[in-house]
Image (cartoon, rainbow, N blue to C red; front, side):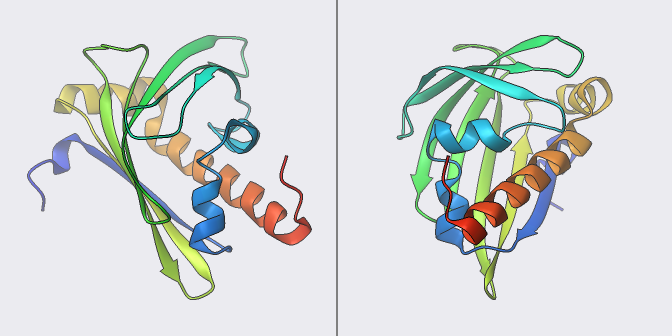
Length: 158
């Protein structure tokens, strides 16, 4: 067991597409806006720069009409293997959490793993209980899989 296990959320999924295509779905707004977030959510991007030190500022629109301001700073990008990021409501958010997304070949498919580490166990528990973070992560990866599979099948890329 890792030293951060009680502060982590880990979700994974096999996506039936090569790592390069799955990774690409994270690199541009035209892709992200088609799949990012749990079922019923949509996003509006305010700014986007996919590079180490770059940021993505956006609003997630919930199915109930609630808007959630979001901010991501990319801390490490290793195509097509790994993306590390800091995610909060805004730059400087004291409750921001770290996530690492890995893309591992699995035959002709890709195993995507999202490992999120919170500063405290209480923050992790709040994310799970208040925001359904585990189920939301699973739905997000399912939406990614659906999108990437369709792009791979049709060649249509937003």
